Length: 124
Image (cartoon, rainbow, N blue to C red; front, side, top):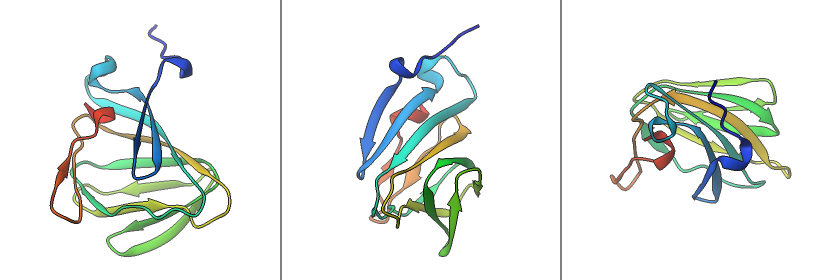
C-alpha cells in the first residue's frame, strides 16, 4: 500500500497560503489530487475561477468561503463544495490560523482576476 508521509509532502506557497501536496499525478495518483491548505489569520483569499469541482473539509479554524459572490463561514468539521466554473476564494477573518483538506480531480486550473491562468503544481 503506498503511503505518503507528512514529512514527504511538497509544500507550495501562494498568496500567503501554504499548500501541502499529498496526492497528484506527479505523486502517483491518476485521477485525484489532495492537499492540506493552511490559511493564516487575518488573510483575504484571492478570487479565482476554477475549472474543476473542489471539496474542502475544514480541519481547524474558520474559513470565509466565497463562491460567486456568496460568502459563508465554515468551521472545523464543515465541508465547502466549490462547483466547477465558479469564482471562489477562501480567506480567514479570525485571529487563529485555519486548515482544510482539499480534494479535486487532476488537472485543476484557475483563472485569476487579471485574466492570467494558473496550473498549480499540486494538481499536476
